[in-house]
Amino acid sequence: MKTAPSSSLVPHVITLAAAAFDEKFVPYQRMAGAIIDLTNRNGACEPKDLLALGFSHQETIDLWHMANAIANVELRLMN
Image 1 (cartoon, rainbow, N blue to C red):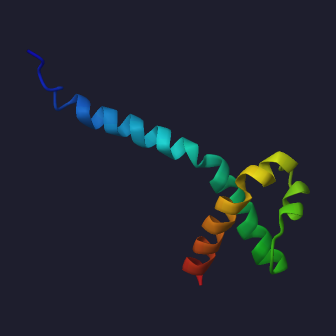
Image 2 (cartoon, helix red, strand yellow; image 1 turned 30 degrees about the vertical axis):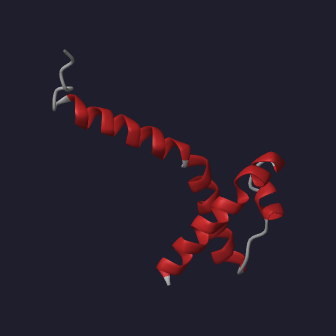
Image 3 (tube, helix red, strand yellow; image 1 turned 180 degrees about the vertical axis):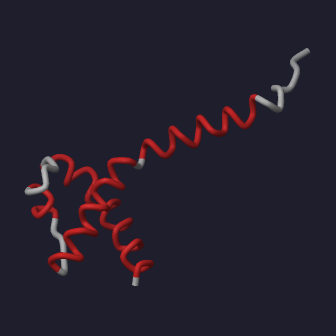
């Protein structure tokens, strides 16, 4: 007969799962921060602008849409 996991393990497992989930979004957040900075400074940000900040061409392809969406939400919350 199997026993249920101890209640002290459940919060630890949830914390580990949340940490793994958060790590997945680190690259998006990093790019979103750059988009916000450039938008505040220049009034807009295009993917090519991120290349000058050290983002690779492949990163802009892979991350741009989600990072830009995150940045737009954060910019609207700031205003």
